[in-house]
Image (cartoon, rainbow, N blue to C red; front, side, top):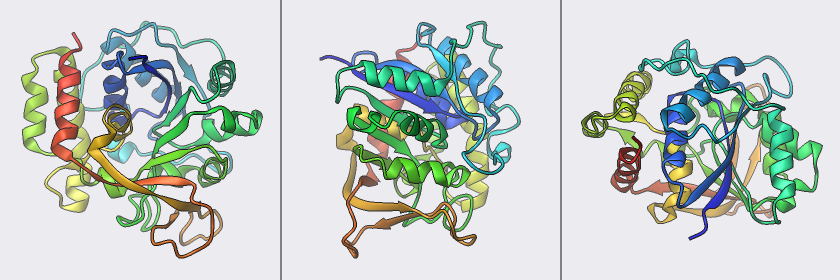
Length: 314
């Protein structure tokens, strides 16, 4: 099988970090052409360092990491240290990376990789605010038609928001960028809170990571133990939702997930609902159906995949 070429656009974040590890642990299915970083969970300097830490932890330093946009298209950056800690990767002691960031800007790298590949080849995997992706689409309008697909983590409809009552963090940080992406015309698949809130980090899952007995297992156990504490306290769930790895798991085993093609629009004007993903789940309008909205996951199958792949690293 020829590996599917992808670009991971990310703002690590513990869940982003695990998603990166999952992708890098799956070379037979996924060819990670680049990791591009954006400001989001923590500022850009930290998201870039954190991505470099993951390629080193995975032993995949040949994968280039490009630094991208340091703030949203409009307004001030909103970050989430209250969830991820000051470093973005609190919970694990990881060495400072020795691998250098790749030369050039992430937006230029995205445009170059997509436009130099055969049409319908590259999948973009945004795991954070969509600033880099929107900027790339604006810089090269042909790019949307050349993509195979955009598979992203963001938004929420049935679960509401996790940053405001109606807005999920990735979309709320840069609604204008999200609006550009959802209007671009490329095929889009969304892994929203509606599905990630069904992929809960339960104690037995944490035990499985610890039992791997590897640097990766130890790091992931520490990262997720720290990371889930916020959502467990906030929602009263049995475990915190593991958001971003759902994107990579969907690429590896789409049969674990269920959803349907719907219309999605982004609210950018209302101060009450800014950043809301307005999903026409029941076909109430005649607007275009522009995104596959994932709502269900086989959570046990998801964690089996994650643990099994991470076990192969090191």
